[in-house]
Image (cartoon, rainbow, N blue to C red):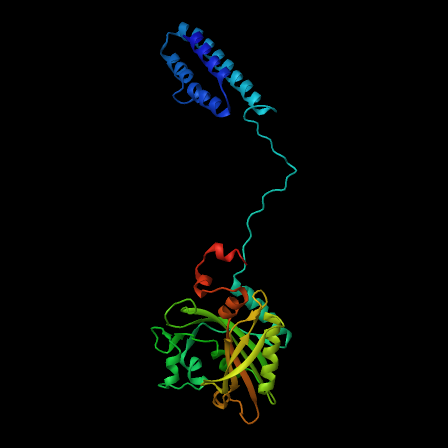
Amino acid sequence: MLNQLKQKAIKEIEQAKDLKNLEGIYRNYFGRQGELTNVLRSLKDLPAKERKEKGKLANQLKQDLEEAIKAKSKKFSVKGGQDKEWIDVTVPGILPSEGHLHPISLVQQQLEEIFQSMGFSVVDGPEIENEYYNFDALNIPKNHPARDLWDTFWLKDISLLLRTHTSPMQARYMEKHKPPLRIIVPGRCFRHEATDASHDVQFYQVEGLMVGQNVSLTNFKGVIEEFLKRFFGSGVKMRLRPSHFPFTEPSFEVDILKTQKAKGKTQNWLEIMGAGMVHPNVFKAVGYTPDKWQGFAFGVGLDRLAMLKYQIDDIRLFYSGDLRFLKQF
C-alpha cells in the first residue's frame, strides 16, 4: 500500500506543471485530510510490531515526498522555469500616495501671504457667534429688514447663531485694539439657503479691515488692485460698482474682468467681493471716534476665488470629499 502511494505521488510530482499545481499536490498528501496524513494517523490502531514496521516506512515515505516536492519547486524557481519570479532590488520602491491640500486651503494660503506682505495681520474668530456681534454691532439692529439678507442658522439659545459672515470680527477686534490697524479674518460661514452650483449652506470668507486717520477709498483701491494682480495675474481689471451694506457707507461691489488668452476674448464682469468705508455707527459701537478715525472693510469668498482661479463650475465639489477631484490640486 505504501509503495503504491509513493509511486502515485512521485508520478504526480514529476508531472506538475507549475508551483500552483505543486502546492495542490502537497495539500493532497500532507494536508489535514491528505492521503499520507491519514496513513500516519491510522498507525496508532495497528499492533505494536506492525506499527513499528509500517511507521518506519511511512516516515521514510514522508521524507522522500517532501524532498521530491522541494526539488521540483527549485526547478520552477531557477532561470527558464515556468514560474520564474525575479526581483530587481535596484528598482526604486513604490512610494505611498501623498495627501493633497484642499483647493480652498491653497487659495487661503496664497491670500494670506499676499496681505501679510502688505502689512495685514491674520486673525481668527468663533464660528458660533452671538446676535450682538453678528448684527447689532454692525449697524443691523433688531427687526431691521437688512437682517433678512442673512439667512441665519439660529441655535437653541436664541441669542446664539452660526455666523453668517466674518464681519463680526471687525467689532471684536476693534474693541480690544487701538487704531491704526490692518487685519484679515479667514473663516467658515453658514447660511440657510438653497444649494445649487454657486451656493451652499457653508462657505469660506475672508474679512478685511484697515483703520487709520487718513485711510480713504484710494487706499482701498490700491490694496485690492495689488491683491488681484498678484492672485490672478497682471491681466486682471477691476471696477467698483455702487451697492449697499449696513456696516459700510459708501458701499460698493468689486467686479473683475479677466482675459481668456486661450480663447482670445474676455469674460464678462464678475462680482467677487463686497466692500465700503466703515460706517460711523460701527466705530461708535466699538468706542472709536468717527471724526478721528476712518477705514475700509471688505468681504471676499474663498470658494468664489477658488472657482475662478481653478475654473471650477460647481461649489458643491469643494465639500463632496471626492478624491478624484481633490487629487487634481
